[in-house]
Amino acid sequence: MPEAAVKNKRRPLWYNLSLFNLPVPGLVSIMHRISGAALFLSLPWLLYLFDASLDSPERYAQAQQQLSHPLAKLVLFGLIWGYAHHFSAGIRHLLLDVHVGIDLHSARGSARAVLGVGVALALLFGWVLLW
View 1 (cartoon, rainbow, N blue to C red):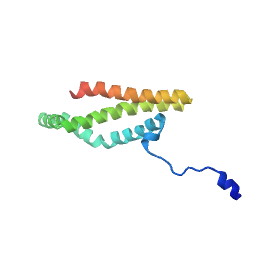
View 2: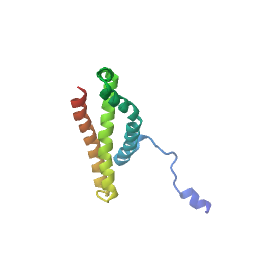
View 3: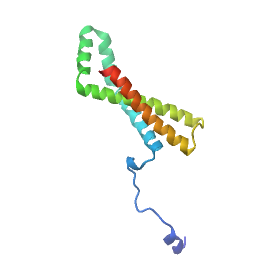
View 4: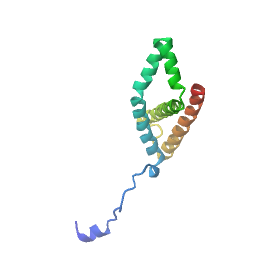
């Protein structure tokens, strides 16, 4: 390539890869992956609690005592949000796979809707289940 063409070609000086610079659909996609990983990694603890709740009255009381701790409630609330977001974003991704809402305006709108629905469902189910 001639040197004049190389000098005239504008290249970025640095790439800003922070999450705050992503468009909303990209943020929803990354949060979909994070919520899926968090749900998968929490399965052993949730299965332990489920097993304890079905085993005997003593282990049920132990699981109930463990879940009454504020930190456990916070973790469960995060998992409820993760499930609500992962479910909503999964439906969005399935619709995008069949070419529904792939134009830019619709994709941004559906991404915002996923964020809103995930938070709304987390607040609703979190309040009902945890308090």
